[in-house]
Length: 428
Image 1 (spheres, one colour):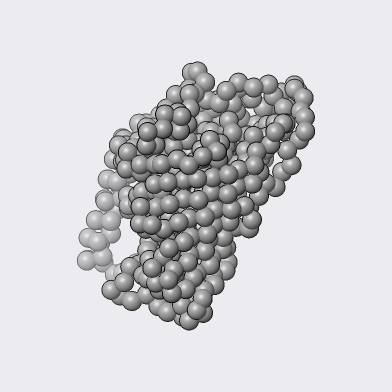
Image 2 (cartoon, rainbow, N blue to C red):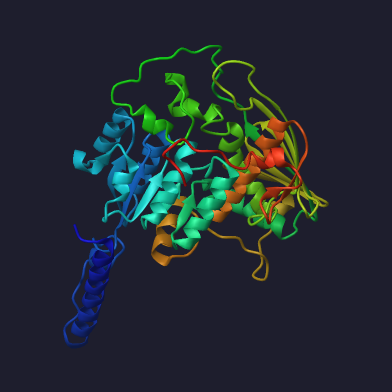
């Protein structure tokens, strides 16, 4: 198999040769109609080849999404569940030689340009860092990270290796969210003083008890656990329910918080920073398998004086200022006064990153090498706000945070929760 470097050099040379030949011929010959596929984004030499890692509901959905994009091609699949893998293989129309149990085997392929990581949360960063080190660009589902320390390691790795990473916080590519944040950033509601965020409550009930079960045939449970602590298998631990166990996720705080707290960060011009003080109260299961908060109430304070109040309820973000408010959720934006919604952003005002299609934005940035709308740094910072809320709720007291140094202030107990040890042999 040819090396990736050699392949790219020859592809570029062929492309340049074709273009120069076409220009030369055009100067001396009668114009010829040439199909757009010869030089367009969907030409074989221009297609972005994609491998999908993690093929549950969201992973298969992402795979279908990229499969349907002009100029991209899904060429490899990976999942530790043979059933998920086979279903995705049939949907993608690939042969068994393009399917893997271990994501490292997929990353070793020279013909894969980018990967989509849609594993459980505890695998997001290890798989993504391995991908960028292998020279792949990454589309990683939200929440981008399991811990704050992981996020910093990933953002630094993406920068160090010169890769493109898009966090799957697709609300940033929704016009209603961009419109709301532009209005806030341009002072349409006056001075911003409060942001209210509601996240959805748990959609699964904590089982009162659970039993150890045999691992199903075709499911590599040891690989599924990966860097997480070893625990005996039960079906309620894996697949969607992982979200409600702290070893693998942060509950709805990180699941929906990664969406609506992300929008709060955007509207507050805090994409490269975060709150400086956090205080929270959470309700946690007293028994059973689930360990994440069932209800959350967190107050964040930013250096600019803005208060962010998070509660469990619906899914939305509301910005309140001295002259009005703006409310935004999926498919809906509202304001008081209503006239705010009729105002247009002027040429000399702040205009935010405009992406109308989250996956297409990723593909476009692979070609341009520019940062996507939800870059690794943004995904890390928004995830950090979620993690800070969980830490404050778990400690049951106020904590002070230094967003520049990414450490707590004079708080060793809180600092010990910034990262976690990983089960051998896994490490970042």
